[in-house]
Length: 312
Image (cartoon, rainbow, N blue to C red; front, side, top):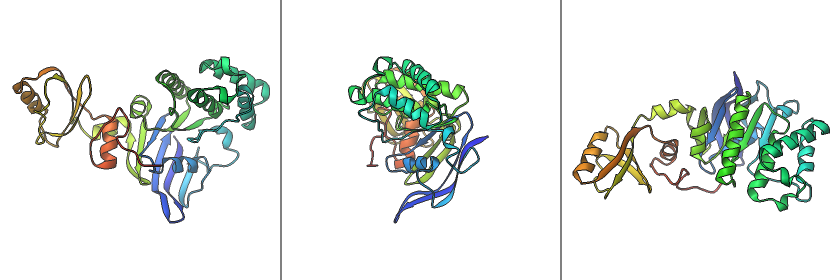
């Protein structure tokens, strides 16, 4: 069963086409990654799903219906542009947000306490947002988006501003929500998180779909043309006739082979050059590598993020 359907959706702002003929579906009970470089149309697409923007062409359906006030209690939305009431205590505004979604105050207070405990914020419930770090505020706004227990959760850059510990906590919360049957759409630049969490993905660029499908199927589509190699010595043996691109990290290299290149030739040349090879493994390309090559036509990796970003 599909929970979200975009059917040939186009959105214009004057002469600028932000989204062009975009179609994708989100299956019930899955985590769906909406990916793309800055300015690709991800946030515009999300805003059409939650009915902030109306499409100029095509249809956007949530739970089989056009989004209406009656559907709002079933949807949770964490926008990219965060915002909390600066002079209002954390617990008070979370209860307020729950009330807006139809949760009575008694139940809202119980849920707020549970969520603050779960996200390690109980000691801050009577503080104001200005007393909290950026990461703490981010977790509070996540709570605000799920406090009413929605069926569909739409999270725009949910890991932005979080330290690694908080990222792990939030990731586990999202995975737990999936186990409860929730459907989650999130947009992120953190390809590592996408690989760990997503069932399906859609990559868009310049408002147009570049690739989509199940994450495993998308990676299989690219074949095993990447070598993970841990070696000691110079990398002069990585010649252009075999290697399209390589990234050398402190503990290993990620080597993208040219089409038709034999990985064994790389190993032979490394040994002939006197390199000490500690690990040599032919693998599917990382999602980050697929992302960059799909968007730019060039393979490039930088710490699990895009190597270059345009303004949003």
